[in-house]
Length: 113
Image 1 (cartoon, helix red, strand yellow):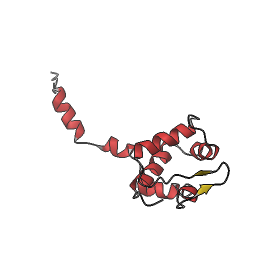
Image 2: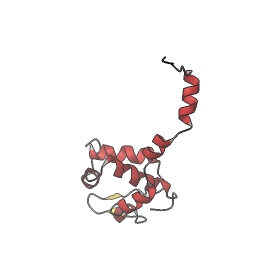
Image 3: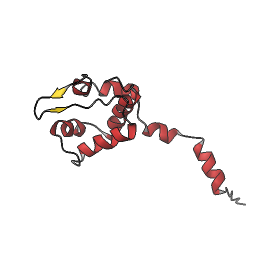
Image 4: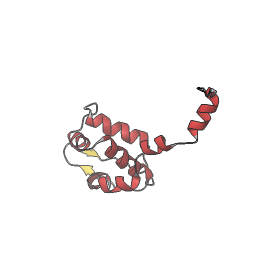
């Protein structure tokens, strides 16, 4: 004899929210990101750094919003944002790498890197 369990949608949604494993994975690993961000800190880790050519002020990204950082890196990688250095850097990163690096920079205070 087969039994079918019917779970109300509200109860199912509540149960799913108790297990944020998928969300935690999507947020990246800041500790791993610190290692992967070594190259990034060559520009973004220098307070007041100005790029020589073309001349522009390199943004500080420490403490920046995680989702913004992920979206920006993927946009560079996909050619949706134009900056040769950033495109090259982003092209060398997997989605997981981007998530890790973004988690690292997002974890920093606004006055760091």
